[in-house]
Image 1 (cartoon, rainbow, N blue to C red):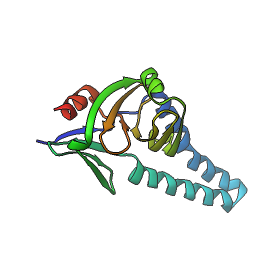
Image 2: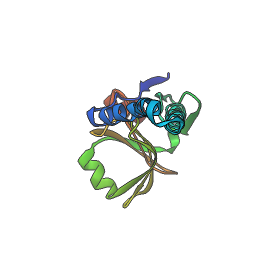
Image 3: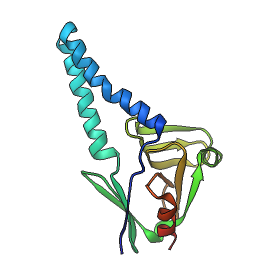
Image 4: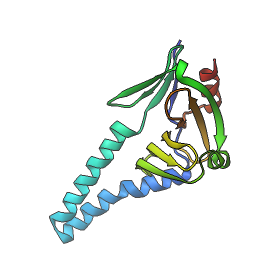
Length: 163
């Protein structure tokens, strides 16, 4: 039986950043009325980047079944075998900081969340798909990089992965 978990709603810090970033193309287009086509071109480039993040970086949902954990985007799907999942646990921001040390995100960040890789001082590269900054699921893998995700119903997600 497949259990589906949508990406968690954005928390206030990410929602605030996303709102500001989504306003940029509008402001650039308004500025283009006075400053010329260069700002229109910048707005179109931003809209293209935003569409790319929406379609290829920000997952829509996670699916857990007896064989795998799948991450589903509008234009792609990635699955890892349940046999490759050593553990899954809920961690808060402080626990995450202790686990990873200093970090640097590589990928998309700020717009709808953080997606891609997180280079960490203590754990190396970690795969991230997060839309919140307060509560995470840490997925330890037997082969491969750990994952950090933020699905809705995090307790149920951990329970589904732990079976």
